[in-house]
Image (cartoon, rainbow, N blue to C red):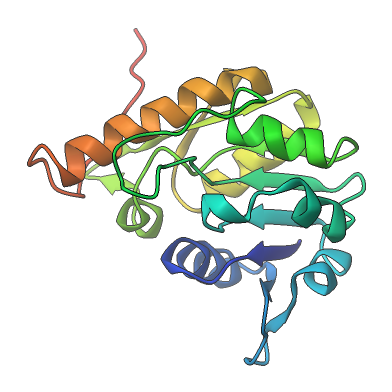
Length: 197
């Protein structure tokens, strides 16, 4: 699968390396590409089947989204609308960051995922014999199935969290993870896990 990852911070770099490691073709989108596997954002989108948003929240503006010409591509939104002063989530008019992406790219198949865990869990989601749960939200059933498959390839236990409107609660859950990991003393080696019986 051809995957374009927009943003080459620790999230984009980690997911990209892991997907490349299981055989996917990965290119990175950048404002100023310099590496052989980097293109300008819009160029990276054009060569991809799946586009991953691993950018800072401030980048998720309507003009930026329109310039990308996402069309009907599958978009995985990993972002969280965190305030610049790291005090919490900022209100989003559309309800969530993922819904803003969907509004800015109305034909795209937007799926919220990979936002409720830290980058070290992306690198290794195994806790002994237990897999970290990855919650996935979106309105397109086939798109969610693809994202779940991509998550399984990285060792996650993916679970369907419902329609894209549930993204606002996944973003709130992300703030719980961030607060516990970075403010309340739990450290980054934590993940949520869905149990059944």
